[in-house]
Length: 216
Image (cartoon, rainbow, N blue to C red):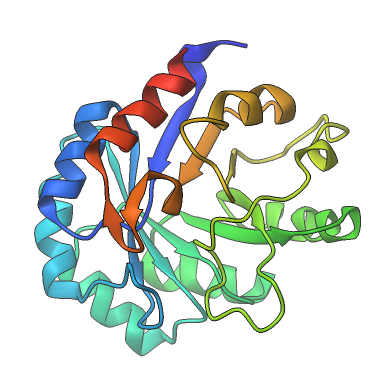
């Protein structure tokens, strides 16, 4: 596996300081969460300040959950973004609508708990620019992601062909990131709670350790 090809996304960043820590460690994506029920939620004015701290070459991603056009208008109108991440139950048709309206690449999250869940990927690969394969939240969970849960990574071992770039998420930490990449063949990893000292509080040392672990 080529370590140089593995790209890291640090999600759920809440400040310019967090963004600088992620970029300084070598992350290629920084994620901002716009979902009020999440401890990582940021309002657009604060998110704008954080996004402006990202250097050239680091993609600024907005995570939303079943957001309306009005909500997306508000976010995109205030925050300089490079990509939208749809992390709810958005249909393939909704993905196309968002791409057409906002003119930004779209990453669609797909929750996985068992092999049957992987079938969704085919439909979303037709319309999304990237796929995020995450652990499906447990029934009754408040959050669609960021729960610190992983799925059985062996489910991805049999998938040899991907039509779009994809990213692995769910329960990743500095301690298991390398093994996850090797088991699944992922060249992109997304981490949020695994680099926190408390829910919504990013730890610069753990961010650095995560990127270092991926690079070997």
